[in-house]
Amino acid sequence: MMSRLIKQIVYTCLMFLCLPAAADTLTLSNGDKISGKIKYLDQEVLVIKTPYASIQLDWTKVKAIKTKKPMTIVTRSGDVVHGKLASEGALYHVKQDDGEVIEFAALNGISQFYPKEDKEKPWRFSGKTYAFLELKDGNTESEELNFDADLSFVHGVHRHNVGLETDRTTKKEHVVEDKLQADYSYDYFYNQHWYFTTNLGYEEDGIKELNERLSAGIGLGYEFFNTPLHHLSVEGGINHIREKYRDEGVKEFEVFRWALDYSKEMVFFDKLSFFHNHEMFIPKESSKNFRFESETGFEYSLPYNISTVLQYEYDYDNYPAEGKHKKDSTFSFGVGYKW
Image (cartoon, rainbow, N blue to C red; front, side):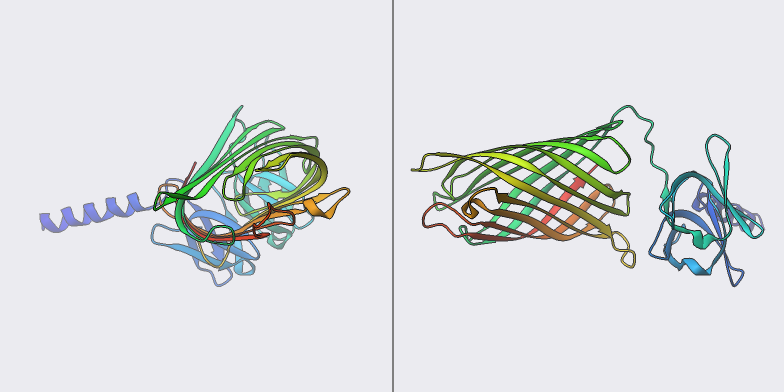
C-alpha cells in the first residue's frame, strides 16, 4: 500500500514538472483544450509546443486562446501591437503593458504573432559562425573546409553589421583557395521600415588574381518585416569601387548597388528555414564591371543554438582577370552556432 502511494506521489510530481510554468491555452472548435508554449502563428498555421511534442494547428479551428506572456501581434491590416492575447465570449483582446486593451471582433483579424522580444536592452548583440565543407566549380575545383562569421549590434534605431569570410586551402603544396572578404554596414532607421545605410567592403582572392577590392557606398533600405519567422529587406544605392588585379593597374569606378536579404521559417517543417540573399553591382558607364553574388539554402535548427546549413553560392563577374572564369558556384554543407 505504501509503495503504491509513493509511486502515485512520484507520478504526480513528474506530471507537474512536465507542465510549463506559465502555459498558454487553446480551445478548439471541437471543444478540445491544449496547453503549452505558443511558438508562432503564420500562414494560418499555429504552432504550440507541449511537454510531449510541437503541434501544428489550423488557425481557423481555434475558438479561444489565452497567452500567459506578451506576444507581438500583426493584424491583417498591417498594424503591430504587443500584449497578452485572450478571448472573452465573442470578443478577443490584447492587454498591453500600459493596461490599454485592444479588441478584435474575431481571431481571423490576426495574421501573425509570436512571443514578444525583449527590446528594452540598450544594446542587443547577436551573431552566427559556421564551418563549411564546400564543393567548388569554376575558377576553383576542390573540396575544402572554410569558416564564416556574421555579427549584428543594435542600439535603438542604429544597427551595425559585420561579416567575415576566410577561405584558404592547400593541396599537394599548391594553394587552391586563398580568399579573404570583410564587410561592414551601418543602418539608421528613420521610421519603422525605411533606413539610411552605408557600407564598406574589402576583398582579396589569390586564385582570381584579385590583389584587392575596396568598396564604399551609401543608399536607402526598406525592411518589409523582421520577425523570428520572416525577414525581408532590400537596399539600393551608389558605391565607389577601387580594385587591382595582378599585372594590371588600379581601376576606380562607380556602380549602382542593389541587395536583397530574405529568410522564412518553413511553417510545415518545424525548425527548418529557407534563406536567399544577393548583391548586384551595375556599373554606371561600362557593362564590363557588372558583378552578382548570391547565397541560397536551407537551415535546420538543433538544440543548444546549433544548426546545420545546406547552401548554394553563385557568383558572376563579367570582367575577371585574363584566363579566369566569369562564373563561380559552390555547394556547401555547414554546422554553425547562433546566439
